[in-house]
Length: 286
Image (cartoon, rainbow, N blue to C red; front, side, top):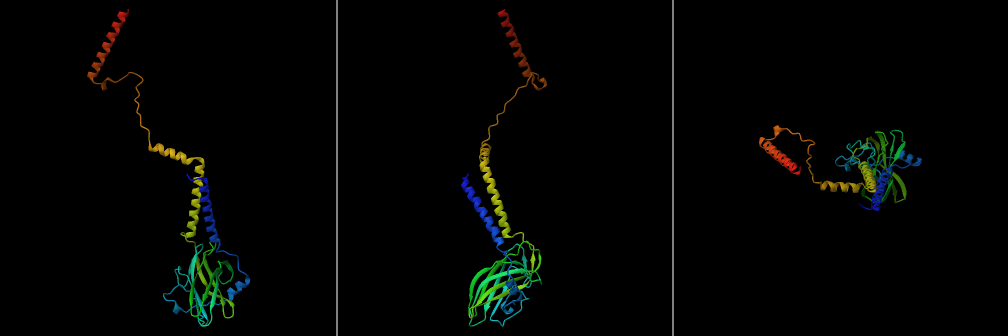
C-alpha cells in the first residue's frame, strides 16, 4: 500500500485537474463589452474575399457582402460545420473557426493584433456572450495571406435556436498607425443542443470518478480493509482439508433385512460364545 503522502499527492493532482477543467470552461465567458465596442460591432461592415478563392465550396457565410475594392479581404469558415451556408454550433462544445486575411495593398503592411467574437440576439444587437480575446500579433505583408485559428464555446445555458455570431480582427495599418476593426464573419447561425460526447464532459466525469476512487482507497486503507481482503485471499487460496467424521447411532436398533444371513449367524455365534465365557467366569468367582 502506498504511503498516505502519495495518496494525498494524487488526490491534490486530481483536484487541480478538475479546477483546470472548470477554468477552461469559464474562460470562454467574459464580462459584457463596453458600449463603444458594441456600437462598433453594429456599424462595422464585413470584409470578405471573392468566391473565386474558395474552391470546393467551404463553409463561407454567403450573407457577407463582397468588398473586393478594399486593400484587404477577410473571411471566416467553420470546418466542422455540416452546412456551408448555415453553420450549426452546439452549446457547451468548443467550435473551431479558420479566419483568412489577405493584403491587397502593394505598399502597406498590416498587423493583426487580436481576435475576438460574441453572440447577439437576432435583430436586437444585444450581446449575450463575449468569447475570449486571443492575441496573435501576426504581420501581413503586401500580397500575403495568413490564416488564423480561433476557438470559442457557446455557453451551455443558451437555449437552442437562431443567433447572430460575430468574429472580429483588431488590426493596425502601419502606414498611419490607424487601428481598425475587421469582421470576417457576421451572420445568423443555428445553435443546437450539447453533444453527449463532448471531450470536456468526458474529462469532467473521468476526473470525478478518479477522485472518488482515490477517496475510497484512502478510507479503505485507513480502516484496514486491504489487510482483511489479503487474508481472505490467502484463506481462499489454501482451503482446509475436509475431515469427514462418522457419527454413530444413539441406539442399537437395526433392520435385519439389510444384513446378510451369514453375518447374522456369525454375530449370534460371537454373542453366544461371549455369553458362555462370561457365565464360566462368574461360576469360578462364586
